[in-house]
Each structure stands twice: as C-alpha cells, then as structure tokens.
Image (cartoon, rainbow, N blue to C red; front, side, top):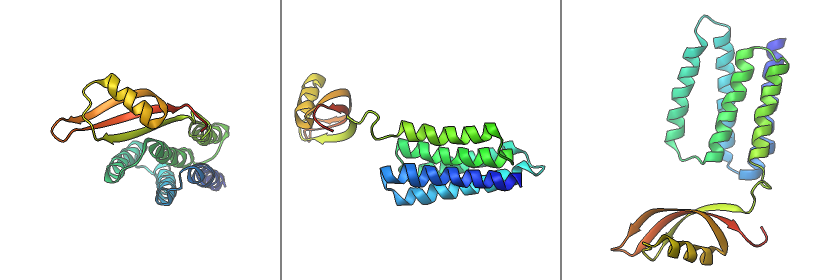
Length: 183
C-alpha cells in the first residue's frame, strides 16, 4: 500500500508540475510528453532498483547517461532543462523511497514549488534576452550598447558580442535587457 501511495504522490506532483505550471507558461506540447515519460520511467525503474539486488548507483548512472544523450539530441532551453530534471527528481524521490513519508512528500512539494516560483511570469518580468544579428560591424562595445538600447527601447544590462564580421559588416550579439515601459 505504501508503494501505491508513493506512485500516487509522484503522479500528482508530475501532473501539477507539467499541466499546471509548465504548459500554461511555455506551451511546448512535445516537452509535456518528455516530462511525463521521463518521470514515469524513472519512477518505475527506481522502484524496481530499490527492491532488487541491483545497485541503485548503477540505475542512477544509466539514467545520467540517458539524460545526457536525450539533452544533446534536441535543443532545449535552460528553463525547460530545469523542468526535465525536476521530472527526473520526482520519479527518483518517489521510486527509491518506496513509500511516501513526511520527508519525501515535502521534497516532492519543494521541487514543484521551486519551479512554480522560480519560473513565475511575474518574477523579473521586465527582463528579456535575445540573440541579435545586426547589419553593422560594431567593434566599439559602447556604441553597440547605445544602438541596442535605441532599437530595443530598453536598458541593456548584459551584452556579449559573439561574432563580428568586418567583411559582411555584421555583428552577432547576445543581449540581456530590462524593458523600461509597461511589460
């Protein structure tokens, strides 16, 4: 019965994380499937590893390798990576414990709450980031910053020049900025 409670708690946590937190904010249907599949797969495997003579370290190592392969196979943003690993963590917490006690329940709630708060649209809502290809080769970072602030209508808070092409007269820059008007 304790294992069924652990499975139920995991399914509730991953459902809240995926359908109530992630999807309403980011709308990537393909990652909903990935989060659910990874979570349920990790949960099932962790429960089997937790109840067998095979070491949990071997199972976690295999999941680490599979995660690296998965994450390298398609572009995934940093906030999506956080959801991906939260799905892994929820499955491991529920699966390896085999039952839900106060600590494992609190840890699962903490994972979901951390992403709910850390990825909340109201948190730093004026801040944005973009990679911009400009049709002028800027070798003076101050001039580039001034130009970007005019184009974006925002205060540039971080600027990284990725590439300057003097032949084709282009600049590739990653810019982080704070919008100054209404968000």
